[in-house]
Length: 325
Image (spheres, rainbow, N blue to C red):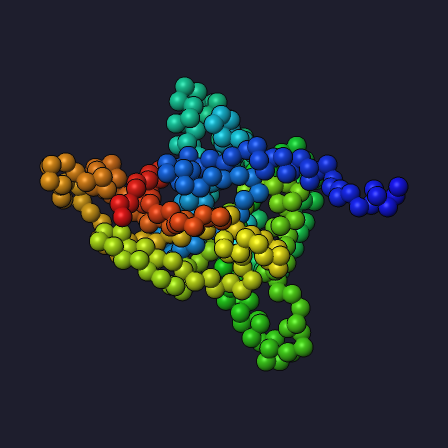
């Protein structure tokens, strides 16, 4: 009898509840078109790649807001942010949070507004590791931190900004090891331990995972009349890719890869041009003409076609528009 029982697969109640949550809570960013192109579920891993000043941080802020804002329409869950390059602007984030609360709860007074803001900020936990080994260690003990400090809160989002922050120091360290201590280079790389720790967190708590990454090397550039877009080569070794959906080697799999690129055109001015009917073109409306336009390319697991649209980062909001082929 014991032999039969030993052949039956088993799992802990924690893992069972986690697997149920993965299919019962769609994550919404409140960014038009983006939510339509990417159905986000708990446990999904998203990589956002792009060069400097292409909107990655603004994108990240919207994900954090969608997690910590009080319900409805958000979930009021804890968000864990690893600010590896110390670029998180808390003043900017607080401004965006106040704006979003004013829009969601326009009838509350100043006292209630301040209370909602404070409650939301208490759900944001920021860590600033100074090296890749520190990041790996912090992720390894994140579940202990959750159990001891915030046991009653549910982790809805785990974000690392950026995965590339320690790229150059790690590259130099590896070169020095190869030159002076080649026998010590045979072990698993630190990045692999980071990805393994993230995978363990997903299995136990199923947060949505957001990883930002630099766009250092261009692999292809798609030219069009108005909206050139860029895909970037992955410079981090052992980093998961969307297409690697059946691999058992990688500890982590990407559900979606988002590539952001700025068009190489000068900003347009309102009333600069019109179509044949005399109406302004969609991207030249007065309310978005001064905004930063970013081309967004999305590759998703199990989907052959790439989604492509435009993000307009205008003040405190992100608008979207379709791109005609």
